[in-house]
Image 1: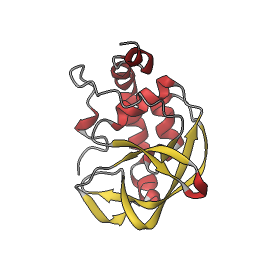
Image 2 (image 1 turned 135 degrees about the horizontal axis):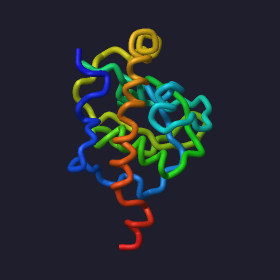
Image 3 (image 1 turned 90 degrees about the vertical axis):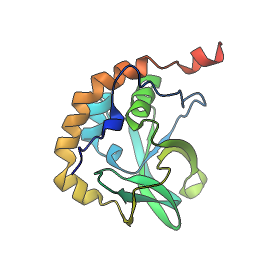
Image 4 (image 1 turned 90 degrees about the horizontal axis):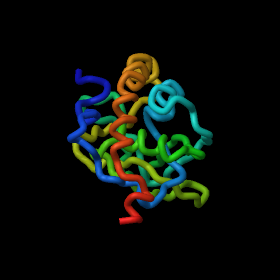
Length: 171
């Protein structure tokens, strides 16, 4: 089995992602590991305000060789998760660095007419079954959250190297 957090989450200085946050996202729909308090505490040091949310037309798919899911289009399905609000720019940048450029940051419609940003899996390595949150919690959460806490300082340093929204609009 591969590591719970893949090599894509490298914190090398030469691996600075493009700034996907220039549109100033304010709400984040999370459907996988970021639903767990231990993971959020490990990564950003707190649990933001949150509420249950559903994204119709999407599913949290199991991925080959990974303990975390990918959000993929599925017209007859709906993905259940949380809507995170009230995050600082620093917290957004850390989470964006954690999710890396393997995911696409997209604005999605949610049940009830609201919209939020979500990290969408672009395809490949998608399994037919949905990600099993309970299995992750029972088998992987403790180690995954501990690993998130260990890599958080590197993610924060890497996120700090990225231009801010203000930096990109002043150019």
